[in-house]
Structures are given as C-alpha cells and as structure tokens.
Length: 152
Image (cartoon, rainbow, N blue to C red; front, side):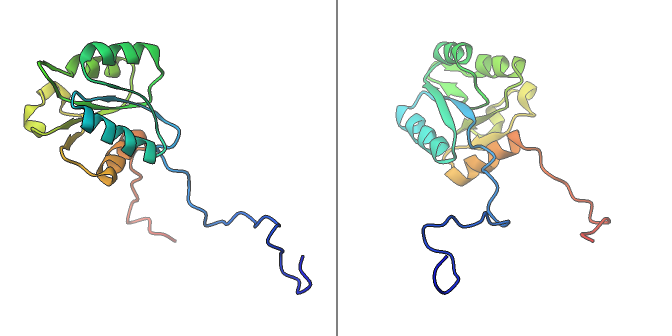
C-alpha cells in the first residue's frame, strides 16, 4: 500500500470480472491443406495470430494424410483444388475422426460435391476475421436465445 492508501504499482491488480474470455481457438492444433505456398504461409500466420498451433501446411493429399496420422489435430482448413488433385480424401479422413474442417476455395460452393453440403466454404480471398468467425462456428456451436424468455 502507498501512503495514500492506494495499491503500489508492484502489487498485482485483482482479476477483473469483465476480463475477456479466452479466445475459442486458442490452444487448438490446426492442419492447413494448401498447394499455394504463399497462401499456406498466410493462413498459418492467421491461425497463429488466433492462438492456434499449426501442425503443418500440406501441399497435397499424401502429405496431409501423413500429418493427420502423425499429429493430433483439432481443426482443419482445406483448399479444394491441390494442383492435379482435390482434397476430398483428406476431408473424408477428417470426418472419420470427427475433426471439424472447412473448405477454402476460389471457386465457391458450386465446386463442392453434394456429399459435403454440410461443410462450411470460405471463399478466397478471405480475411483473418472471416477465418476466425468460420472456425469458431465449427468448434463452438452458436448459442441461441429464445426472445420470449427475455433477459429477466
């Protein structure tokens, strides 16, 4: 305490009840499947800024499946077109493991087969904020409030 009765600068401040909750993506491990190196690095940086650990950036299906087998993964971002192949075998492996993922593509949802209609599609180019919102929706279901119940 200082002479005036206030806390000295060296004493810790009490935790604020209004302190922000931890980010919903913080601490999650992400897999990025992207054949364009520059885009892969950008997505990796965006995820790191969101608090994620990136297991790796895979440029093709074989590398992605290898990373998936070797690393525990919580979420994934998949480019659809990977040169001469498509990322659907990776999507299938993620589904079998019940790992949430989204597709990121410059071609829009029209290029996604009907069997993946439940998977979110992020249109390229996208911002870090849009990536954050999309992934947060995958890992934390939306909270629905019944307006009839009111706030009290």
